[in-house]
Image (cartoon, rainbow, N blue to C red; front, side, top):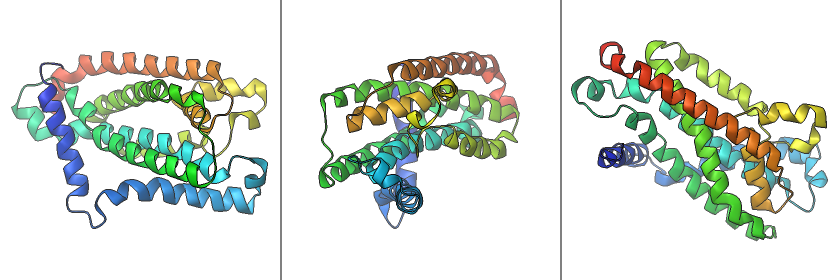
Length: 254
C-alpha cells in the first residue's frame, strides 16, 4: 500500500473532484445533508416531542448535529466503499495494483465532508454558547476509532458486493436499520442499563457516543467506546482476511 500511495491519493482526489466540480453548489453539498438532517430531527424530536428542554443546557440541535456528522461519515464511506471495486472494474481488469486501494480511496470524499461539517459544528457551538472542554483533545483518537469501523465494514462490503451484487440493494436497508441502533438522536443513558451493551456491539455506536461526549464536554462512556472499537477492529481484521482471499478473482468477476 505504501508503494502505491500516489495511486491512492490520485483515486481519492478524482472522487472528490467528480463530486464537486460540476455541482451547482460545489462544496456546499458537504453541508446540506448533515445540517438538513439535524434540523429535521431537531424540529420533530427537539421541538415537537420536547427533547430540547430535557437536554438543557446543551441545545438539542448541537447534540443531534454532533451525532449526525460522524454517522454521515460512516454511512457515506461504507456506501462508497461497498461499490468501489465494481465501479472501478475497468481499472481492476487492466492494471495491477493492490486492490485494497480502491475501497480506501473511496473514503476520501466523505472525510472531506466530515471535516467541513465539523467546522460548522464548532461555529454552531460558539453561537449557541456551548463551551469546549479539555475532553476535546480526545477527538482525534475517537475519529481514528471511528475510521477503524468505517474501514472494517467498508472493506468487507466491497469484497462481498463483487461476488454478490444484490448486496448493493441490501446495504442501504442495513444502514438505515443500523442508524436507529446507533445513539445519534438519543443518548445512551435513555436506555435501561441492562440493554446498553447491545448498542456497544455496534461497530461505531459506542464511538459516536464517545465522540459527541468529548465534543460537548459531557461524561464519556469509556467502556462502550472500547467495546465498539474492538468490534470495529474485529470487522477490519475479518474484512482484510476476506478481501485478500477473494481479490485474486476480482478481475474475472467484476
